[in-house]
Length: 638
Image: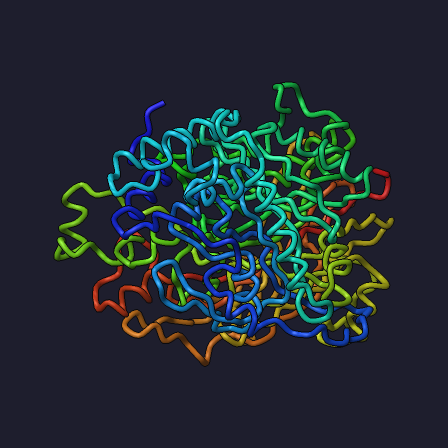
């Protein structure tokens, strides 16, 4: 195939070339901040006693370093060590030379998930004296001639689309070395009780540019000699079988699909890879290996969108409707979003006796700088030299246009929707690999759009008076019900109650409301959805006719990005009973928490540059959190 400037990789290479790409890489390790590594290494500290009521921990299970082929082409030279230093609150360097540091404090856990395909190979090609540096297109790949760069990278694009490895790069020495670097770095930075690392990688199939990517997360230090990649097979079912085999060999791991929004409806299909209908064996294979899904990251959210959820006025949040890597519009949304998949799962369960889409919720960044901003007011984008400047990422018009009006009058396209990246929250007894991984497995997890909003959800019976802000309330909820990610069995003559609490991130805006999203299957096997507001800020009451909280009047000053300090609450909680509950219907329920509006990163860019915000981008954002669902199963269904 011929490679056009429409590919993201092609555009990235163009900008990298114009920005002065490094032509040689002679570092053996240590990365851009090896001195910082020495400063940040600490002795293991005593582990605090486990909390049986569980603590909340925040982290990122999706981050790339120079070992990923695309990050390296974006001129990123930061290492896995740098990624962990940043996550622990340290300072590292961006590819453009400026400092990167979290404003809201260190994370609790991190997985470095570089692409398994050609892992470490670009660095090896760019290192003089290696066998890889002798490939015929090595010089062109790092040329200052953008045409040569794009043509050279076309070899990689063809390989990634076909799933066939290039014969001249079939030697796995560089990949084994980079994988060992990943494993060793995770071991160096894992500090039980303080900071947890997970060994991981990204499985990156891209059939016809449809995104079927997964991150693979290993439970402990026991990892395979080399990852299973899309150059072994693009079929996710083969990845799951490989994970089954590794598990039988004593290597425990799980896979997490991401960016289903860019799969063009193929991430959550009703058929298997071979086109045959999903059967029970497929459903069980998938759920055994893929219990979670990434709901939001820098390339948009995958919860739902307006065409799938027309009665959800908050469904239009951070919707990216383009393929990853090419300027082609997504046209099939069903099968590409999580809420729709959860509903499909109910339908398939009624047909085959197993639910292939009984997934918990996490979030990630997909940052390619060995770091991700997470914070709208501390935005540095996610792809090295590709988007490091505000006019590169579409928040400020290029210097040769006097206004956005002139820019769009010239026929220029609107930028694709890109965000600051999400975070995963888990409820676990302690900050350690065994405890956090167990939380991932049982799906006691939630995802946020970046802020560290804390949220808990339980379903059960006898919840009257339960207050999740107290230890006694949490203890009662565990004893009389199930937490997010669990399954609640029906009881004759009783309707389940849902106890929920959300607490704000002090570095972000106050909370506005808590919603419960319900999906259910009727007697015909068809699924439906409805959104209920269940707790309101500022003393508001849910309207019985609308099932919505009143507008609390929170505003944002678009000249300064100051937001209302007297609207919204630091904590919202409540106990709710479904007013439309039917004990004969299988259903799922998850909580969605909304903050008051704040400035989006693109508006912050415009204000700091003293220009008008891009009219094709949202000026404000309502940050949010999504819990894993709780599934209700009728009493006679098991």
